[in-house]
Image (cartoon, one colour):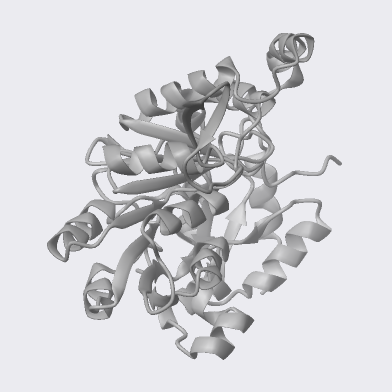
Amino acid sequence: MDHIRLMKPYVTFEEVESDFREVFESGMFSRGKNIDAFRKEISDYTNATHTFLTTSATTALWTCLKLLNVGQGDEIVISDFSFPASVNVVEDLGAKPVFADVDLSTFNMLPEDLELKITRKTKAVIFVDALGNPTGLTKVKKICDKHCIPLIEDAACAMGSSENKKRCGGIADLTCFSFHPRKLICAGEGGAITTEHDDWAEWLEIKLGHGASGIKGIALDFTEYGYNFRMSELQAIMGRKQLIKLDSIIEERNKIRQAYNDQLEPLGYRIQKLGSKVKHNCQSLVFRVPDRLCRDHLVKYLKDNLIESTIGYYSLSALTYYQKRYSDVQPNSRKLNNTTITLPCYDGVDVERVIDVMLNLKC
C-alpha cells in the first residue's frame, strides 16, 4: 500500500531542466534574468507596485520590521494562531509581541481583540492569513489605518488568495510570502515582500543588496549597511513555473476540499470557515475534529495507516518559551492548537482512502 503524503510540490524536474541547464552553462546563478522576471510576475499577479525576493518568509518579516525601525520599547500585535516564525522575528528585535486571539471558525485575528490591544507603544500589526485564509484582512486594515499603524500581512500561506476581489500582496502595507516546500509555490525555500510604498521600496532595494546604491568609481557604492537575503536563479525558475499555473492548482485543491467536507461535515468535523467575499487558495486543508475525538490519537492512527497528517497551527502564546516569558495564553488559539488537523490535499490524492481510514477509528 502506497504512503499518502501530506503535500506534493507542483513542479517537476522536466519542467525546469532546460532552464536549469541554461543557468549552469551561463554561470549566472544569482541576480539574473529569472530573478527580475519573477519579481515582475509576482507584482503583476498580486497587483503590487513593488516586489522583492528573499530567502524565506521569515527573513521577509524580519526585514519589514527593520524597515519600520522596530526595537526595544515597541509592541507588535500578532495573530496568535500561526507558525512560530511570525513571533520569533519580533522577539529577535527586542520588541514585545502582543498576542491577539483568533476566531474559532476562520482561525484569523479577531478585530475586536486587536482594538483592545492597540496602545501608544504599538508600532505595527502582523495579520496572519491562517493556512492561506485572508478572511478579515480588509477589516483589520481599516482598523490599522484609523490608528495610523502599519499593517504587515504574514501571507506565507496565501499566495493566490483574495478578499473583496483583491489578491493578497496588494492589500496590506507590507506583505510577506513563502516558497517553502509545503506552499503552493515551492522553490525549495524562499520568500517575497510586496508593497505600494515607493520610499519603503527604495529602502528595501538598498538594504537587500548589501547596502549598495549606485556606482563609485568602477565599483559599487555602499551608502548603507545591508543584508544578503537573496533568492537564487534556480529558485526563481521553480517559482515562475508554478506561478503561471497557480490559478488552476487552486481550483483543483478547492474541489478536493469540497470532496473531503461533503463526507466529514456530517460526522462532526468543522472545516475552516471563509468570508463570503474570500477566495481561498486552500494552502492547507484543516478541520476541527469532533469533540468526541482526540486529535493526537487521530494523527497517530492515520500515520499507522500510512497517511501523513499534522496539527493545524500553533498557539503562539502557548508555546513553551512565550508562555513562560509573557503568561498571556489566548483561549481560542490554544483550543485550535489542540483540536485542528491538516489532511493531505494535492492533485491525485486518494480522498476516499483517507476518509475510509478516518471512519474506522474507534473513539
